[in-house]
Length: 128
Image 1 (spheres, rainbow, N blue to C red):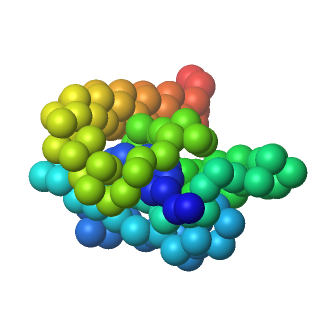
Image 2 (cartoon, rainbow, N blue to C red; image 1 turned 135 degrees about the horizontal axis):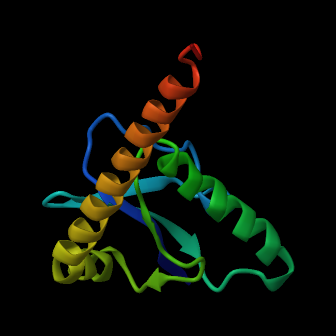
């Protein structure tokens, strides 16, 4: 039996590169609803308990690939949907809340980057 495994959501940006593969070498797909993009794969379900640790590592790698490029809201490892339509319905129902959270995260990240830049510039000024 297969299910849709959700990885994370981010503010849609066509410049975001996707990981080559997902958990258990599954292909990764993107569903976009308005400004929200959701990354997912179709996987065999349930996961083999003997390989759960490896699946967790692969899941983290996929989410981290997007996180290194932008703010993300990650799903938990075992967040699965019956099918693509269920994921799309979830995105349509909760998209506005995800987008608001992501905008807040992005603003916070930008502020931290600016403050870090100011701090570094100040530490590089000569002392008179």
